[in-house]
Length: 330
Image (cartoon, rainbow, N blue to C red; front, side, top):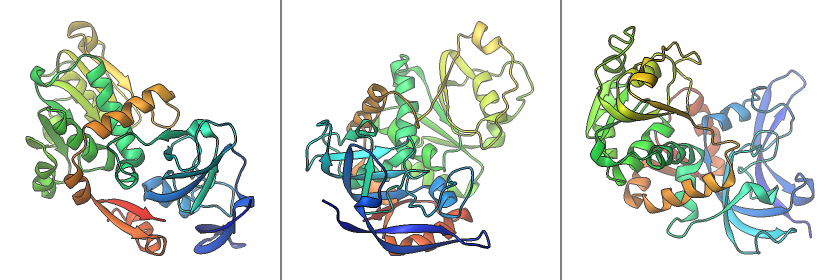
């Protein structure tokens, strides 16, 4: 049975500009998929702001409803994977890109895209984490599953004031690790220490002497959200048997590196992808977040808005003026 729902819709105009407005839509207009979900919460990510602005690298077909994250209750599921009323999380894949996303009160997607909400995690908390939190958890679980333990020494997080970096700091701290946070924003030292970082250093401290083939061994593990020279230096400064995860390229997509850290110190480099990662790994990451969350800190990390508040936050995000996680209440 069809029903009307409210959604943010982005339209492409004849002059190739884009406008956003809140509209009434009908569930019959949603794309094909086995799973219909009534969205209770979404979150605003930089990719959403790009989609809402008509960026062709994210979305090409309009009108469109952005929102790469969504959490809510199942309305129906034609293949029986979920039951009506089940609470689910949907992130990644094509949601919010070419498939209408979480900035609408209903989404219809393949049931294989959804994750059952883990015990101990609320729908709102899952969207405070969102794709950024999933990426952070995939990075942290890759370290832990590779044998890294808190007693082996400090873990470096680069790009620590960003969405993935800040959540990685909180999750690592909650799991008992000593975290050194690297940032280019010297004014954010107190903020990063509130997240749990034991030490805060500048990115220049990380990259100093990075032209050398090897650096003094400092880190037992690294969560790198930057790429480029930062990642090169972090790898060179890893201790023996260190583990490095890589999930970002804001610094550069290039990696100019020799093999010495790998063959002399046994350093391991693990790439992190949250868009298409296998479901068992995805489930493991969400469970890890549920078990290693700090509920009070999550609230401090986030702010809640309605659909009507999205326009202001989209503009602010495009200008780099959003620091806290923005949760959208549907």
